[in-house]
Length: 183
Image (cartoon, rainbow, N blue to C red; front, side, top):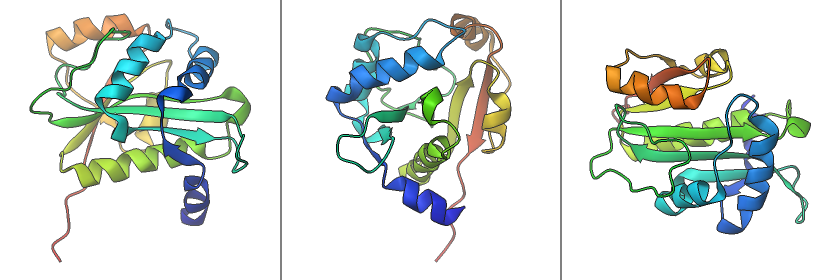
């Protein structure tokens, strides 16, 4: 598994504004239970936290189309960002790394791209110094996230209200960051 992730990591690079057209194409192919976010909303998230947004190419060929992407933001766990917000301002005191969106083109599934992107996210979580990761699982994806250590978290009333904008069958999940080992 480790060698597979290492070779797949060659397909991953930081997301660039020029990638958004392909990101929108992948998003439209993946979201079946909620309305995809606008280019303006995704561009705002990319501008806010470019070091936490990645894309994966379908192959190592220079002109290879994109096959997957991941958006993450340093954020406040109790107040996840609204879907399709036209702007994105990072909180002054983030307490989590929020995984906003991971999508893999249906034509590219089964190649390990999701795993490679999630591993990149978890590596960034560990390096960030934040003590947890949070996400909202949509389209019955809780089992997938559970394999990565994400577990349901108790919901405040305000958080339950926000979740309603994410469509049916959603779950708010958290994962604690690994505790750094003493050297």
